[in-house]
Length: 106
Image (tube, rainbow, N blue to C red; front, side):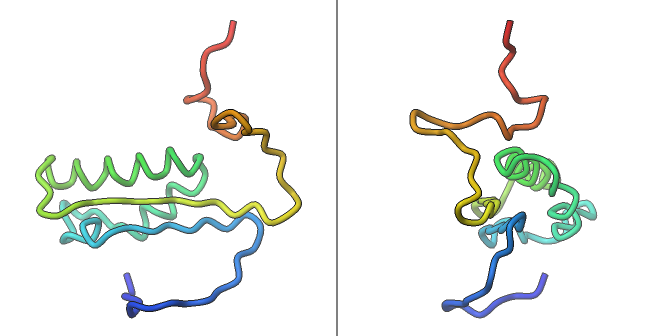
């Protein structure tokens, strides 16, 4: 992945964009052929929380659970302004979560 110099940057996010931020521990070698940019693209569909879990799991698995550095990921989806359907006054709103992580309701 191209390295961005330390400092501040400005960019415009469009509705539906995902921002993926990670520490340098996610870049430790190319363990077992793990290609982080491709993995980021392949985790575009799931909820950001699930994408972060998948990215961390992949790097931990690739290093057989023995990382030399911290590995942290944060995924944020931009929904734009004034378009929110969220209702999260008392906690996480699970309506946008993928089916497999929604709580079982009877």
